[in-house]
Amino acid sequence: PLQMEDTWELSTQYRPDVATAKFQRNWLAELQSGSPSLFRATMRTCGLPWALSGLNKLVSDLVAFLNPILLSRLIGFISKYHTADAEPIENGYFYALAMFVVASVKAITFEQYWVHNQQVKSLTKISYTTAIYRKTMALSNDARQQYNVGGIATHMSVDSERVAEFFANFSHHLWSSPLQIVLALYLLYRALGWTTFAGALAMVVSIPTSARLGRTMRDMNKLLMGYRDQRMKIMDEVLSGIKIIKLYAWESSFIRRINEVRVKLELATIRRYGMVQAVFSFVVTLVPFVVSFSTFGLYTLADNVSHGPLTPQLVFVSLTLFNMLRFPLSFGPMVIPGLLEAMVSSKRIFDFLTAGEIDFTAIDREPYDRDSPSTGADDVLVSIEDGTFKWLSTDEPTLRDVNLQCRRDELVAVIGKVGAGKSSL
Image (cartoon, rainbow, N blue to C red):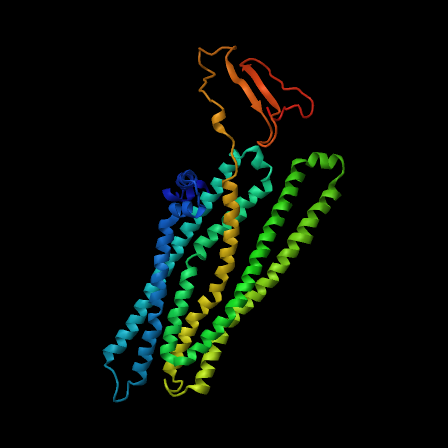
């Protein structure tokens, strides 16, 4: 069987204690600044691998556009090989070797881009999960009225995963997709002339539709997260009081409550979200075909002279550029829903991390060694002097001027009627 010693040790920077300590230092600095930003704290924690990821992505994108240029030169070399305008054979070897080098550099930089993305995702997920857990241990009573166990679990599992996923797989496409589209259209314009603007027009027409669908998906996602928190709250109540529910045979009543939220609200919203997402996927898949079809069609009908007929050299180079244009046109619009989902989740995590905390300075903790020979039965272990207690910060104090000492060998019981202040104490 697989044992712990069979696995390798994590790098120091990816150990949860190291990553958490770094994020906590950065987040504490943000809190002390007066205008905290979860984004700045995250960038200070994993900004280096994120920047290296972007650098590799930039190199990979730029090198990729050398391939159609070299392909055009190679096809031109082959088509003129047995003519009077033939180029030296060394040029053909150079074009082929250059295409190999370009493909190799692109593959290496893209894999490095992917590796750094996974580093960013790991650091972000670890930092957020542990920060949320630590915050849970320090929430004040006022904040606990707003955040139940189910909602906190959603922050740790769903919200942190969405933000980490966006930083790792979507953030660089905010600039990479427009860059690829601009470069591809420029090279297409050099190859096909003004008919390229037919494809550009098709892209411009698709932008409002994609934006509208993206906003709809954002609103539905925000609604879905609220329903999910509501269901988790009910489930927490059921699990906490399962003995009472069983004793009073309230199972069917709570099942109806859960199904009302899960089936009528949450699943119905997921179904509508899936339909909108299907329409969105259809639009972004159709756009590249419409762009290439309109450009080639208009070139054949209206402009078959300025750049010559559709020769193999022109067709293959244009198709290569259209294929390179397909990914940013298909994947680029998907970045918008990912960004909106990450913004919603990031706002929820930020609100939770900035919620009220217990005032730990109200209690003095002194070291005490129970096994020391100097300890005795009359040692005071808990002492309250002129204490004032209340359940919520907005309530009137339930207890005033409380003085209490609990000694080591004493058995202390707090007794009182309902509402007398036992829980406040």
